[in-house]
Length: 160
Image (tube, rainbow, N blue to C red; front, side):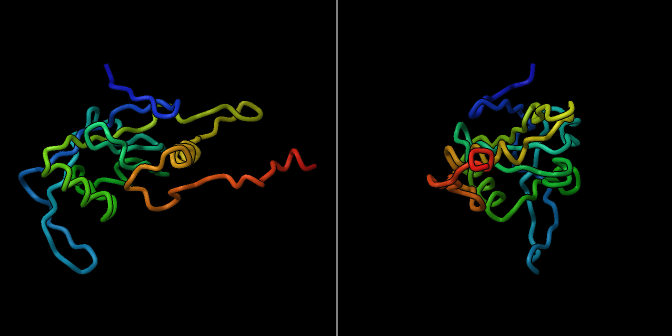
């Protein structure tokens, strides 16, 4: 059975556990060469090709980051089919958490679709990300943190 977490009413399934591997990826970033050890052990390799989804990162039981990707998880996050590569912010914090013996996990939305007009399905991944950011922005989110609707804002349909 797949582990599920409910976050602000949205279902997320575990994509995998993050770990420090024995054999590093030889990487270059911003002109600097280094060895990279942060890797992913997926719970189901098919999830690596999941289409557009919101995702969350947990350090132990703390939600530390939310985002969304537009292609597949592996296109956004993985290098050489195993090494995590997201951003300096997330990657370095994940490495530090692992060195401190914290469990690092990544979860993706189970079904980010809603039915719209004329029976069309719409992916709500960006909306899910923004809703969680508005309610309680995770500590590692920089972009869009603190999103709040202005108190003076009015819906267009209420104006016309």
